[in-house]
Image (cartoon, rainbow, N blue to C red; front, side):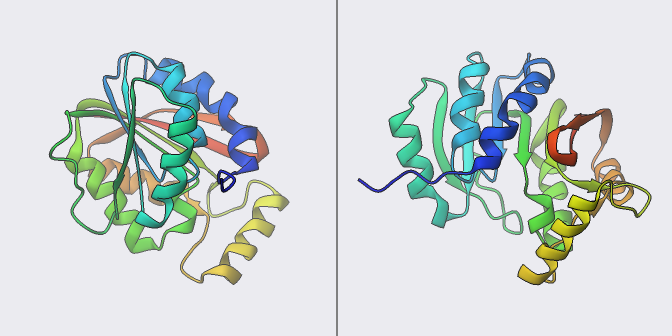
Amino acid sequence: MDPLPYSQSCENNKSAIASVLAHSFCGAKHVLEIGSGTGQHAIYFAKLLPHAIWQTSDQTCYHQGINARLAQYPSDNLRSPIELDVTQPWPVDQLEPIDAIFSANTLHIMSKAMVEAFFEGIGRHLVPNGQFCVYGPFNYHGEYTSDSNRQFDNWLLQQDPQSAIRDIKWIMQLAAAQGLELVADHSMPANNRLLHFNKR
């Protein structure tokens, strides 16, 4: 049996994220996770939120690993991944209304056009009064929040010139255009943030 895909950062940040989601998603019935990656967050948060369906999603190349992890750590409220490319129509029409969306460590590995499409999709598919939480590094006032984030951003640039740590001002503009209001900006370990928005 092939080893399950694994991310150490997921293990490091899941409890801190969970402390926010337990409150932010306390009334959620159907959560869409965008970019489920290794599936580590999905299995952890699905158990944390047994009242909500947790729908995984990612590009097809990650589905085998996600499905293998879900098979090893099943939960009644956990769903196999759907193929989701943020720049294409989102295949969510067959799902129950989405009243919560979560994504971690995705915006900085997307191009600017993909980030814009990401927010447009949220605006289109998240129901009114739905909750959106996004985790990752962000810049403030055009400045890095730490030397480690500066180094990370330089590494991102070497991997893909279109990827970068995004500035909070731009993120707020994209969110506002989709009717998303910032509820809280939570400090997280390793110089990351968790932004919680409510859909008007």
